[in-house]
Length: 385
Image 1 (cartoon, rainbow, N blue to C red):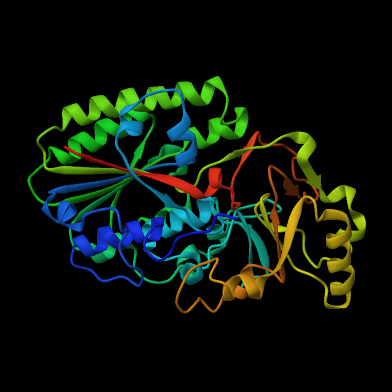
Image 2 (cartoon, rainbow, N blue to C red; image 1 turned 90 degrees about the vertical axis):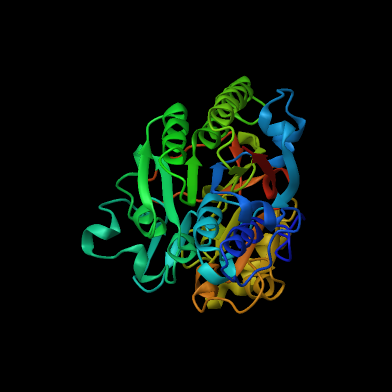
């Protein structure tokens, strides 16, 4: 297993570095490989998050880009290594142990519903939860990093997220700017930087690489082409802001691992296991949270040990919390109820899927959330402009 380095080498530590540069304390130490003095001397700091751009992919990709040439360090994601947990860490400066956002499908016991947390819809479909006055603010408490740092802050995100309640909550304290393409995103960042000499913090999020890998796989020509396009566009952007006293930090929320349909464990094929559960599997296809009926705990453990041991490892959720998989320090009181009773962590390239009634069954060519080196390690790219 490759686990998060919450001590001084994960994305939560990277955010601590940014906060420390602005004179703010944080629960986690700064990342070891990034000089805070460089950030303090910069008029502008850009944190550009490219969803899914893993260290292993970038380091071994045959395409040579400005991103690859400026890798400063290999750092880790958080656990699970997925967008919901990672993005929330970027904007709060907290590990999952503290923010308790634990995956794509998440039980919100306080409202009695399993939610697709980022689009903020009930898993079964229907209207978004904010349409009935339930918002992420009710459980994602505390200040965002933008509310804390005391400089002009900007939150650039794709236009398809413009109606997301989660975006509205996680961008508090920043001016939200939507972009329609990579070039549009970079152009808007350049305009922000040239708008004055006051200190600025820019958070920018790019989702397309992750989407391409899900559809075609990390080894696909499409993934390589997109990274090549990213490199060219960012190189031109760097040239356009040369001499602006800007530090451009590029990283990711997670990497991805290629998966095959033959390696998918579908709960439909395991009705005896499903019978032991009080809820469909939550979390991620690579890290599944199991809510087990108290009277069926023995049967659940026996079935997993005898039928699924080659595909996944079984863990008590309490043990993973105690072993600090989700983070250091005192944990959120909601964490226990959001990670089930047991956690199944997929081995090798396996995935575990559980579809509810009416849900479209689909298979992704690459997945994330697990503890492989491909999923867990992300690059820390540091470019001074």
